[in-house]
Length: 474
Image 1 (cartoon, one colour):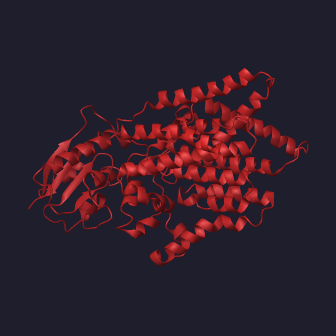
Image 2 (cartoon, one colour):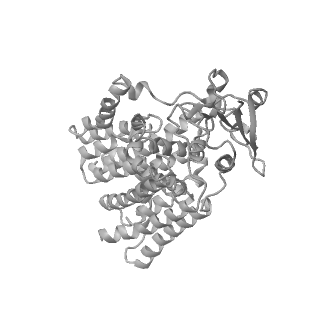
Image 3 (cartoon, rainbow, N blue to C red):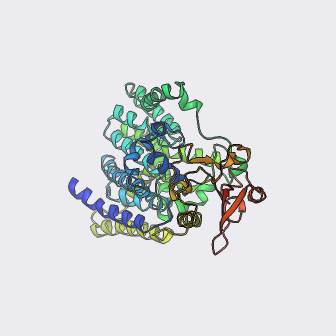
């Protein structure tokens, strides 16, 4: 059965690999490219392994794959997703859910997870760690579960909130030995970064997310719930809500002492429901308040999907329990209908393979033009901000002799002749606060390239997207 389980999971593995190879658009956009670049150049720049924004654990695990290019990083995420699905299958069995084989289907074909797998974003690693922790907890391997969960903040910062839920859970379970191990990841990374940053508390003092509400704005408190179809799909959305009510009923019975709270009850309460709602409510609040550089991106929900899937399966399990167990055909048809609904929804909503990332495509066009221009081969620095520029123009973004920050260009006094300036309408006027007109007016700059999409496209804060290449005159 174990071998059959992994053989079946080879099917979605091949499917995701095929989608990735035929796609030019990837979840996360420039963020995903930057995660790849940090990992790609980690061997040349070992400090990258502790990059707080890039997420140290992601960089450490993915950099061998990143050496094979961007698709190597994508392959790493596909592998993690399949492992995550396999562990969730086993966890569902351990929790006594009757149709455990549905777990990988609900996970891999939930709308946003399906789209996020073929990417280089950190949400998939987070989901993998959470699924691993839940598997260990379902086996009552409390100490090892604590160790795994302790590394969540180094895959995504939201892991700190998840650790709080698990801490309370271990207290209620009276698993005192496990509690100190929730600090394993933080302690190890604090020690690793101490000699590099001369600060034992660098994990907290160098937190990368600041208040960027002026750029990213804020939004509706129920933003993620209103985006339910794009995140979960209708079936999974309805099921996790139903699962919440199913468990709420049991919780009330436990409070009323009509039912006994066993170890599995606390696993559900704190590790599954607690993790999910802390994550969902936390993201809803920071987007509503415009804090922590939140942009209301729905892809962040892919990280917590393992907990969501188990909540949904609890509801489906109780739904099946309403029928006479002798109706075997019904017990076969209903799960198959749910699986079919999830798969169909994933394909209809996402329509793979993915194309249409106009910003990335325009950057690739600019790079192709540059490689065929008389300026290619000049050993000069390049001022830019969009991470895809480094990938497309073959620039080591961590080599100060090759990469310069576009936001610092107006104050730069040592710009050498031949220096290339790449301005794009996404990062130029937003993160860099640099209008293109200020570059056009400089007599020391030569405009060598200008391009915009054939069909007008609007980018962040409604700027018309276009790319300019300038060159410092001789």
